[in-house]
Amino acid sequence: MKRITVLLAAMIFLLMLTVCADGQQEKYVDDVSSSVESDSRQPENEEENRLEGTESGTTQEDTEMEKETQEMEKLGALSPEDALKYMQETENLVIVDVAATRWYNEEHFEGALNIPIEELDRSEEDALFMEIPEGCPVLMHCRLGMIVPGAYERVLELRDDIPQIAYIDGAPLFQEYNEWKRSQDGRD
Image (cartoon, rainbow, N blue to C red; front, side):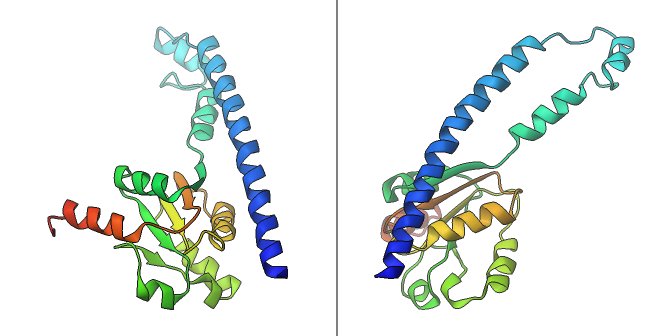
C-alpha cells in the first residue's frame, strides 16, 4: 500500500511538472520570437560581419539562442493511443521498455530495447540509459505506466543529447504497433 501511495504521489508530481513545463515552454517561444523579430537586421558586408563578432554574420547571441532551441523536447506522458500515433509518425524512434525481462520476453514492441530497471542497481540502469542511441527521439514504457515515469525522469537527468522524449501513460498497444510495423516492413 505504501508503494502505491508513493507511486501515485510521484505521478502527481510529474503531472505538475509537465503542466509547469508546458507553461514555461510557451513563454520561452514568445521570448524567442520577439528576440528574433527585434534582431532581424543582417550585416550588409564583411566589415559589418566583423563588427558583429563573426565573419559569417552570426552573433554570439544568435549562437546562444540556437543552442537553447536545440534543447530536448520533453513530451512527457502520452496516452497509449497518442503514443501509437507518435510511434507511427516518428522517424528513427528508439523504443525503451523498462519492464522486467519476463514481461519483455512475453510481449514487446518490435525493435524495442529492454532496460529492466527493477532488476538493476542504479549504476547498471544508468549505464544502459547511456547506451540509448544519441540524436534519436525516445519513447519509454512499462506495462501499466507506473514505473516508467521514474525512468523517464532519470533519462532527462542523464541525457541532453536526445532531441525528443516521451513515455506511455498506460498499457502499451503492442499488437496494433507490431501489426503496423510488419505491414511497413512488407511482412504482412
